Image (cartoon, rainbow, N blue to C red):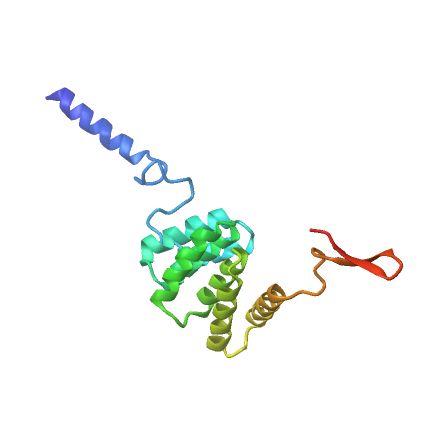
Length: 183
């Protein structure tokens, strides 16, 4: 009985000695585990601006787990994947974002960028036109992306400055010429 009371007294005394007032030892010193967390989207956006794309992606996943999967989180995850060079994943996620909200301009624009990167110039042009129309032409970056897509699709049809297939006219004999090309 006496030993049982002594062990209970020891447990109470040790509980009072914890450095964080009873908070778990897994919490870093100086962090209030009961405080409110900063929104993962805000953290992710700041990390994207800082060029920390992998950390931003993790913050966006946390935001999706906390706030639910919506057009904002899908667009942000797609943008981070695009910045990381994961074009196929970005395209798939951005298409899901547009299914959620077909008028969400950042997702439409970023889908256009993903399509340009993957060489789907015609579809990228159509997507940029959609983003430009939804935005009413107010955003400079969307306007520039549309110009680039138009120039790329028109250059793909015929480019007189293209050097492959260059022709030369060579004189062989008096009055005879041969047309040569480098293939």
